[in-house]
Structure formats: C-alpha cells, structure tokens
Image 1 (cartoon, rainbow, N blue to C red):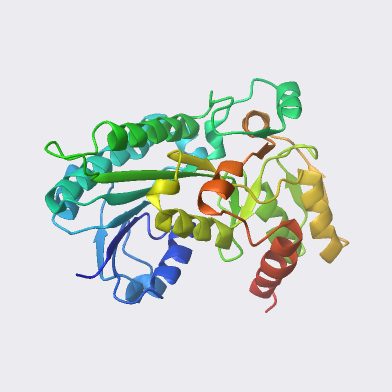
Image 2: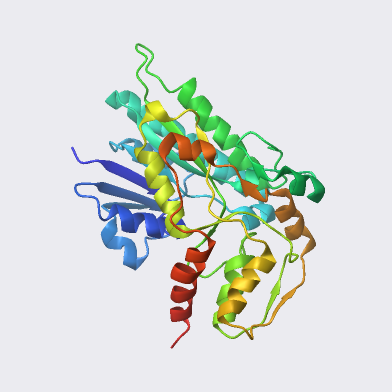
Length: 336
C-alpha cells in the first residue's frame, strides 16, 4: 500500500513548499484540503483534493474513509485574522483540530497502527508580561511564560495540550497498548518566505521591509527599532516538519518542540536591507496593538530539546537567509 499523506491548508505558504517536497517522494499518495480549489501550480502534486472547511464534520467523515498514515495540519486562522474574528478563529483552530485528531485516531484504530499528526504551533503561545521581563528572560524553553495574549496563541496552546492528551490518554487501542495516534508539534518562529507576498501578519514587518525596498518604496515599520522576535527561512520550516515527522518515536521525550534559527531586531533587519538598497527609506511608526503583541512574544527560543531529540539544525542562519534566499529571489520578483 502506498504511503498516504494529508495536508490541510494546502494553498498556504507552508503548504506550497511542503507539496513541492512531497512530490519528490516515490509511491506517496498526497491528499490535500483547502477552503479553495488547489492552486493550478500545485494540482499535479495532489492525488486527491477536497475543497472544504477543516471544522466541517462532513469533511472529517469523508477523510476517515482514507487510509491516512501522516497528517500535516496547516489550516488555521492566523494571528491578525484571529484577532479580528476570535469566535471564528476558535471554531476553525480548535474545533477543526479536535475533529481531525478524532478522525486520525479512528483511522489508527481501524488499521491497528499509529497515524502521525504534525501540528505547526507558534511562538504566539508565549506571553511575557512586560518588556523588562522579555529582555531579562532571553531564550525561552517550551514550558516558560505560557500566557498568550492573542486568540491565535490561546488556540495553539490549547491544541498543543489537546494533541498530547489525545495521544497519551486516548490514543491507544482499548485491547492493547498499541499506539494509534502520534501527535508531534513544532513551535514556529516568524516564517519568512521569498516566494509569497506578506499579507499583514504580526511578524510581517521583516518581509515587508524587503519587498518594499526591492520595489524602491519607502516603508514605515509598525514596530519599534528594538522589537525582537525569532525568525526562520521558509525552507527550514518545511525541513523541520519533515524531519520531526520521520524521527524515531523512541527518541522523542516530549510532544512539543521549539525550533529557532536567528533572532534579529527590526533595526538589524533594516540594516540587512540597507546593505543591498542603501537609499531605501525605512522609518518607524509603531502600531500600539501589534507592538504589544510582539513585545509579549519571546526574544528568542531555546531549541536544545529539538537539537538533541531529532537532530534539528537550521540550514539558514541570518546571513545565509538574506544573502542566499530572501534578497536574490525577492529582487528577481521585481526586476522586470
């Protein structure tokens, strides 16, 4: 039987890159789900596409008919959208995840072997009370300052705990100790893709600087120059998902892992941009609500557990991310 992989939110930034990678797997059957039809450039990379809402029980019932081995649950209302529609965000982010976890458990019970469930979480689960505490705390481990101030962070933190519960307490066959559900979560930092245009996300001040400079436009940054959170190049984010998915379960000491790459301030990002476009006009006009959210997120993460348990290491540090990935590709986008 071919290995069957489900990707929800397949049209999103992570979904695009992930499907490109899955297209390289021999014998894999890829099922995709999104609210919209699959983008034309991805259609050949999916064996079956279902257009629908991940919080719809009818979709869960349809997917439960499939012999799914691995799930990458990317579909979610992200931070900015979730703040505008918190009830909708809770319904999609929490109810959708619970339904898919239950569906995965049912498939695992039927088959008698575990379904691996990959869940992209976020640094939005952290909630530092003030800037002074953030500056003193430095790199945070997985269990520190888990008091998120956004609906998105609240949803993701609950789903981390829900996935662990469903696997540890509810994820075994009743007549044996065989696992039927294997939940694994990554806490992503701000992901920067060279191939997509920033869409107003809370961490988008970094890619917005680059895109505006590449077009010769001025940019008023919505956070202070000293604002700092961890970032990661998109290829590393996708590689982390694949690496955690393939990790030997016996090596994993926890369900949820921080991963990091580099953690520049907004002014350090501006310096990277000016090194390529020295005349670019970058100013600062902090937006109070968005700045408060950034200030509540960690300045950096301690990802030593991921490095020890499944050999995590980013390929792109700050220098390589800008010089070899972001600047060349984004420059080419606006060169014509």
